Length: 251
Image 1: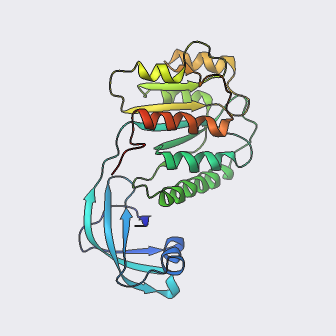
Image 2 (image 1 turned 30 degrees about the vertical axis):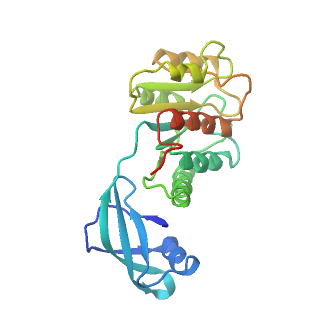
């Protein structure tokens, strides 16, 4: 069943209006109409089955009635991807594919080797666009929770934010002793939140690595191959969701 997202909470028999692109998609692409059922989520912890009661203004407004309500819980760990902002449209790909995998939050980071300039009104516009990308990806893969994309932050601010995470994995091509697979196998306790930090095309500087290690970040390697920035986070997220999350499980 197709899923759509709404803000806030709802109760049985509540009436909800769906407008804009979602309404157009329901009425004109999926060709759904009065009496058809669809699934709605608040993006956090509640999912509803709703029935269409009215299609108005040429499909620009859909009125639905909540006929079933359930709570859901996302299996831990929650993964936050801290991504050095890459060039071009690569970050769009990163958001889309990691949303499909189950990453909970995205934090774009301006590092020493970031070449993209984002400032002023661009920050607000791009953050809005990025959140739209994750929303569409979540709908496509029928994910119940909605990941959040934060506004870009500088590296030093990122270090302060990272301190709250019990596990910080920093992918570094110069790491020669700690490899991701055996390191994860050595973890015995349950971890609720994991931060994954990926550099931009040029990787991290030595100074950035030192600062990250000072707050407890673990630099890890994926092995012999050096991955592109747009595939590195995807690879780590896949391994983490397979080892600790719900990747490959039923239900």
